[in-house]
Image (cartoon, rainbow, N blue to C red; front, side):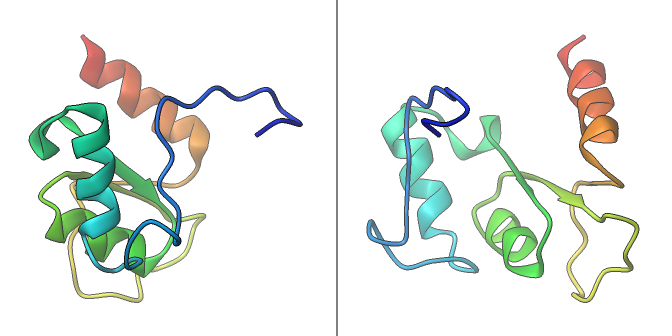
Length: 94
């Protein structure tokens, strides 16, 4: 984060609670941001990311990197890469 000067309002790490696929890290982040899970997104590229997002009832976007899913859950959206994610973000903003 320091190397790339990325600002974060909230950070949740494995030291804060149990880790994915539990929904707890996502719910804790929502709590710390004072946001409802329905207003949050989980973006990730692994099965635990998708499972945690769905369990937390947040919009879940799986970044596939061209792979087939290795999990039975269905994310809200699937994108191939971060450029495609940007398109989804811009479309949803309108």
